[in-house]
Length: 115
Image (cartoon, rainbow, N blue to C red; front, side, top):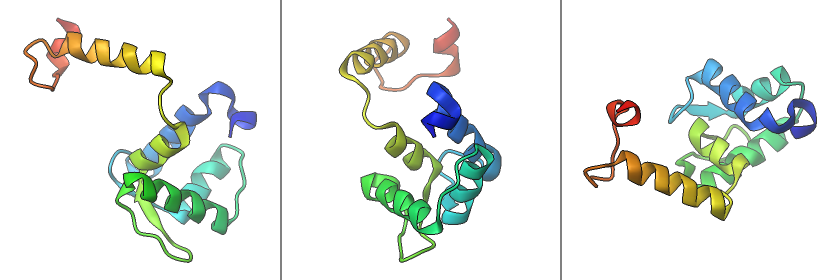
């Protein structure tokens, strides 16, 4: 993925998944993943795509696996591909969230981001 799409490979995959299945918590299948990767110039076997979906589901993706034909959410797949945030980036994200969540409810709105 990185050799075909460079540093923007994960974002390109996320965009392709969103266009195909709507992204977010929508479930993606082995065939969806294969098609998205092929759109990006990366050919994979059904077994490899299914293995990636099963790994993502195992990280809290709420999917279901099988010998073939497993599914998981697009969000969980992207999180599994991206991996954990580096510590410095995580601190920046937490600080930004804390700044936007002015009332300390643990949630933000679109208004907090622009006000």
